[in-house]
Length: 232
Image (cartoon, rainbow, N blue to C red; front, top):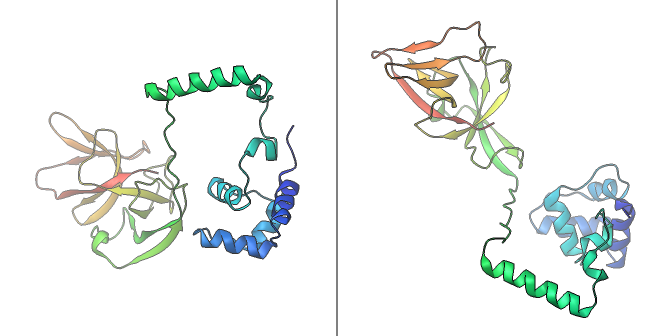
């Protein structure tokens, strides 16, 4: 049965003779920015730690069996229902599955907070040389921003609605080539644009998602460069 998370967390903290400030300090030493007020909110079930914070808490508080501690599993632990011979056979079979290499779980990659540049010159306005500019803000981002993102830029106008709206920050992986259908950030004749890339047999087009805007036909005399692919 599910147990009250906040009460369980508080009980485990007290078993370790830690106050909320001391627990927050231990989390900070692991590179996680956590204040004592956050611990208080977790224990009152006002909000919850994220995945990385949760596993760090379990490590600090010596919680080895998460299900036994927090009661989060829906069904009873079937392994516990086996006798010693049954447990031995289960472990032997598990070892065979692991040895085969076909059923080994891939280790998850956790992304800690990082800082990315968001250029203040929006796409579809002003100079397209923003990647060489020092006009940018720095944003701390978490795992909601893809790990492949290298920088951000704000959208200007409604040409990419409804997917991307005016003043929205889009996150971009810096690269100079795109596949058909990719959304990218482009330099075209001195301006920066966010558009869908389409290369046909005879020409290249930059396409708006908003149907009221006609595609931009790229002509040989135009200067076109690709800054990157929009990843979110």
